Amino acid sequence: MKIPENTQMDADYWRDIERAKQMTPQERVRIGHELFERAIYLMTQGLKMQYPDLSEAELRELRRERLARIQKWESRDAQIGGNCQAGARLAE
Image (tube, rainbow, N blue to C red; front, top):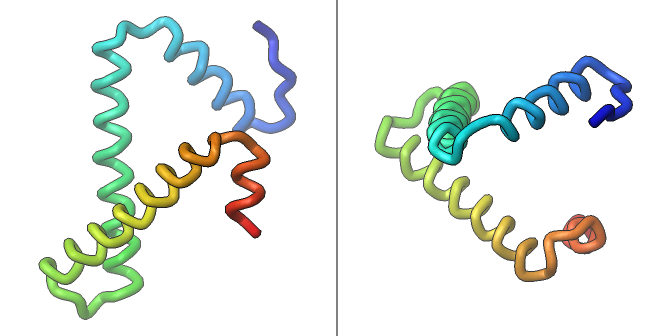
């Protein structure tokens, strides 16, 4: 499949899609877990930069709150239908 690529990010994205299609389900789960762990690490580092005086326990609680907010937003989007129009309605 040849997809028009306007930027290097587009090219990288579609290359990753093609690579994922070749993976076994176990490989996809492993990579999904690694991506989630990396996202948690990056979120924690960002919170530490925003709130340098928070303790580790306070950072964990703030991270939990942010993750809960993201989960609520994603589940709300899924309930609406998860399409582009639903996303536009959420932004309003």
